[in-house]
Image 1 (cartoon, rainbow, N blue to C red):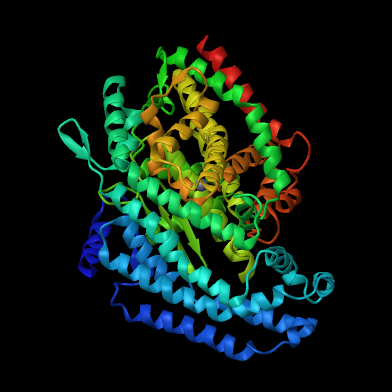
Image 2: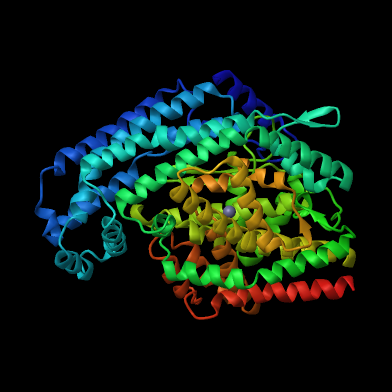
Length: 602
Ligand SMILES: [Zn+2]
């Protein structure tokens, strides 16, 4: 494996682009034999051991502010100085580049077990702290000395209500690998190995999903059907997997006294139930908006009815080959308009080999940004030279910028931000890039771009809330009935997809088998955060367009990490997400764009 990686590095340096096209995992380690790897693991383990030795059995910090300040400072030091995620990241990235990398897979299992055991060593500390009386909690939360740790303590006390005993927590944590991760990995591995017939060739699932929306009608529908057929063959696998991990979650929720299947997600994303309720309600009330869009789309494209394969097809082609270099130039220029600092971050990533651009067999599908404490941030793409690929680059770099600025500005306990604020940053930078390219388009292409943008917004807001509703019903059904068959999961998925697509899009029963590969479902209810992020970012961007100096507020937000609830972080940036009617504001901007589109196409 070490050899393969070396070859890759060579290829990178001789590439034509003036920057690296592939990840340089040498930023982490040279190979699985790199002595630095074991040295890092040993450093992590001995630091945790030292913390345990120093504080286990000590109880003075549970009543004394000054003592607690000391422990928290030591605790924060662990996060600020140790390469905690570097070893596991290294192998995860290798596996994401090549799903068949067995060495990586085996090491992920070994290291994650070691890290879990390691984290278990300091579990006692947060657990002990979470068991203090409500009166002492109040005293600590009001303490001036403890102010730097105020938000951390507040969250800890909120989570404490769902904590189990230390021994039980250890069991919960150790059983998570076989009862959740190995199931999800198993399905992923099978999906990664799928070969779908496409003309005389065979393509991977990731390639097929990228291709479908770009093909002419006939071949699009053929490839869509072959893809579904292949997914359906894995229906039983996914059924077993989903039932297992959802029942496992049900057991965990019962033990931890979570009322609804999504309460734990809300708690970990630091949003409150009321925010989610008002968001879901506002979007559900506006499903007629997305349905109206699909009616116009059907007329515009002259396809009646639209099939599920057509839900996300573009309205035409935006000409121009957005090769990597051009995409980079566009995004850089757009980012510079807000602040040159943002383009500088992109430059640094390209120079270091922190972005992996092109699709290849065995590489994981989609795109992501992975940022961790005391380790470089990496962006994975599947760039196919399209306009959308440019938007994806802007989106993931938005995450990367948020990560870099938060890492730079916050202390250890607050460097990681909530997923709810994550999507605000990414979609904000995506919109900036969009507007920048939009100005350069012909009037014909503007129609196409506007159509595609509205469609993307609908997928981000309406589709994700429909997915959330699907998840709620799936979890409820499994909780009630004990298990749900793959036929029923597919049918349920269709019901919810119809809710936002409307009558114009006709779904076949087998279309529901897209659930097999929908990785969101494995992350339990986080999809609402996409809708949250998109609607908040529309509000922030609206203000920036009116007033260029608002960029300072945006920077404040990007530097805020996880130092407060998303609700409060945005309040500080001048946007009150808890105000009545707030969500409708963002939805209204989409309605206006739909009107504009209708006018443009006549
Ligand atoms: Zn994102």
